[in-house]
Image 1 (cartoon, one colour):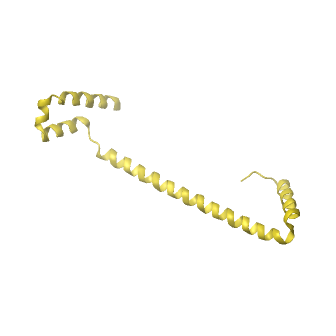
Image 2 (cartoon, helix red, strand yellow):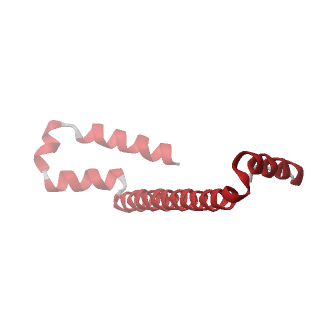
Image 3 (cartoon, rainbow, N blue to C red):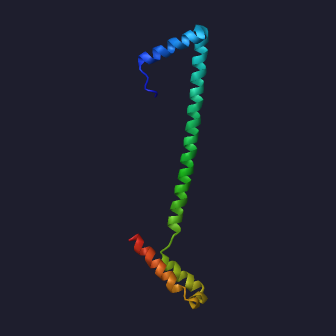
Length: 106
C-alpha cells in the first residue's frame, strides 16, 4: 500500500515502542486497525454511491436516446398536428436544420 519494506516497518515499530511503551502498543495497533477499517468502509460506501449515481445517469441517457426521433419525422409530426405552423414558413428552416443534423451523424 505505502510500499514499505521490512526494514522500514521494523524502524517504525521500534520508534512506536519507544514512544508509547509496550503496554500501550497493542491498544494503539487495535485503534489504528479499527480506524483503517472505518476509512475503508467509508470509501467503499462512497464508491458504491458514485457508481449508483453514474448508472442512473447512464440509464437516463439511454432513455433519452430511445426517445429521440429522426428530426425529419419529428418535423412531419409537428406540422401534421399543427398545420397552422406551415403558414409561418418555418417548416423549411426546421427541415434544413434537421438535414444538417442528419449529415453530422453520418
